[in-house]
Length: 524
Image: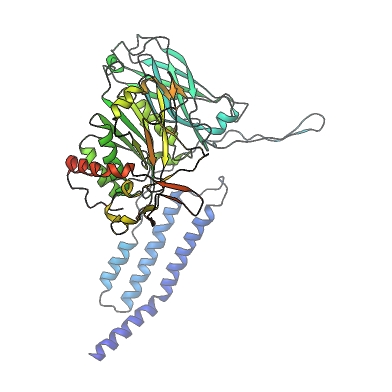
């Protein structure tokens, strides 16, 4: 037995020794190819080496190496030489043919410096590529028989330092109907918060109804002109097919019929490692608050991981929740995951589907006093197009000492019971609108409405804000206290507020009645 092991050892050493030269050759060849590819990345565009040229070299190297290894193995008298040769050939198969390279668009003639009369040197400037897009279309919707809204992103420097303009055209698919043209009225709803891109809502209102012929449908074209913005010597106009209507799809009574929902929630962009339990609590609470004729539109910017989706599914199945995947917008550097773009899309997408539309976040809980109900409050505000809601800021770590041993069993808004009562500071407000009278919207309120706005809603409706809890997967209770009033280490005064704590029991019963115990095991 020992002799056989010794024989196998000598055989392995012999094979390795005989293959040493070929292995060196193979490694050297691969190193050369990798070095060549690296160097090519830094060569100017005029010098190029096409992918077919490289492919022509690769099979030769691979085949030569495989043959060398095979010959050396056979010469060494290895018992598995046939298998080794086959394996080498399989490993070194040449790659499949690549599609032929596309021919790049030739650049414009390069301008050269000139020497003018009097010895003045006129310098030249040559442009390549673009700093940002003129317009990034997200959506377009009808706002009536003769009006449309187009939502998109556009270069922020173009709008800050230039004067871009828009024109709208309606081209009927029925060739006997003349083309209609209207000026596009642009609205910039993000208050200058944009980064590389800013949000643009273009209103297209034609002198008379379009698309009513019903024979061929039509297409809305948006003509976006830079008017020399960024380059005073040029005026680039992009023609954008914003909306296409198929024949017989326009129903005029849609714009005047009673809405499908009483209340519709337009959610902001959700991203990061959200807590499934906090989402669970928020949904159960607000579906109970707004009732059967309500709907919730959730926008996923990367935050709806598997555990969160498990919380949403029961309500999606019952028709209360719609999820929209808007992660693609991350390609374009705007404000806060392009939040202003998303809420404007939601406004116009569901504009005629809801009587009231709410805008707030998933760490905020709208509250109506117990002696009242949401319908009565909204009816009392029906004379306004928009109203804002007062914020109650809650501590995201202070809990009662009585909950110390059972905090993990209680819901977040049930155990976080200390309210920030610091005076003299401005607190954000959230809002609701009657969407049929709104042209564009924001995050905390809209500045583009037809009708009145009121901020005097104290005592009728407010919202509790648990900042920082939605993106925290840990137990929120960090400190347990037994007092009705305290001042934190950073000087913030807090007072005990049991308002939301008292509502928790009924919310839990509502969830159990609606979807059963399927979310009982939800984790933080």
